[in-house]
Length: 133
Image 1: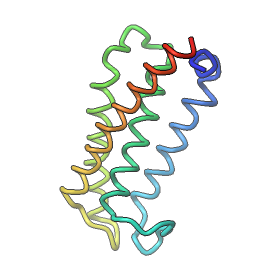
Image 2: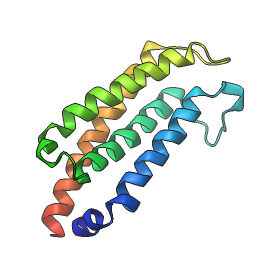
Image 3: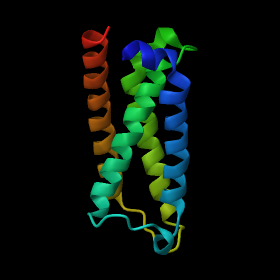
């Protein structure tokens, strides 16, 4: 499985990350009345889940990229910092979007999702690289 992901990383890792980042950015910048309400859960849980997926995909993309292969030990730090900054910036942008608000607690849930997404990435990579190699 690890070798398949590595060999086909563009389609199975990088492209899903880029598409998810674009969709997430659009959804976070949309007025609240235009947002699809697909399931009834807390707004905080939605933030947590969105950034969990974002950081998992971002970590995967950095892990399987070839350009900076010597810097793979910094993946966790890079994802933690950049995804948290992205979450903070999207909260600030939401202050100017009709029906949305900038909430510090939302940013904390974003960061919580980032941290758990990184942990899930580490567990996933360790599992598939040792079990399926």
